[in-house]
Structure formats: C-alpha cells, structure tokens
Image (cartoon, rainbow, N blue to C red):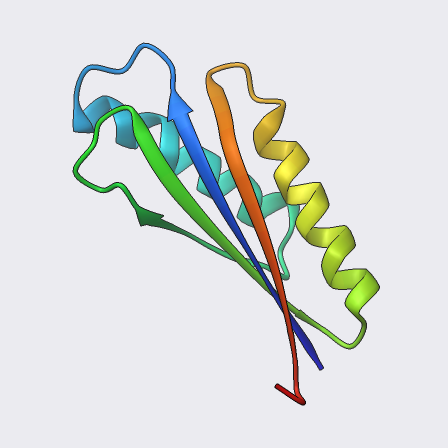
Length: 98
C-alpha cells in the first residue's frame, strides 16, 4: 500500500478579503474532488492570509506509480488555472513499510 501527499502553496489573484479567497479556494477544492474522486482534498494552511492558500491532497493506492500519476494530474489541474499562481508543490510518498 502506498500513500501519497501533495502540498500546494498558491497565491491568489486580485483578492482583497477572506470572503473573496473562499470564493476561489472552495470551487478549486470542489473541482479536484470532482475530477479525482479517489483523492482527499482540503485547505491546510494560510487560513488567515487573504492572498495565499495551502491545499493538501492525499491518495492511497496499491502502486507507487499510480500515486505519482494522480498527484501529478492534481498539480497540473491547479497550475493551469489562470487566477492562481502555483508557488510550490511538494510530493511525499509513504509505503506500508515506513
């Protein structure tokens, strides 16, 4: 069994309040859940900053290759959104022997 974790640090476009931030982040999370039903997605950091967000994605699979493929697809889905600038993406892979 393999567990993959992806942490995405993003900057949002012309956002001036936490309410506006939610109007961008919530649809992004919903889209990832819809496109990739086997992943868990949540806003995991920068809750008090209105132009920054951290999105966490997790997936469990029987193969490391599948985990990597799903996490890369999630990263691309976020990176290609025009209202978001992806600052960093950190992939981590855990197996049942760790």
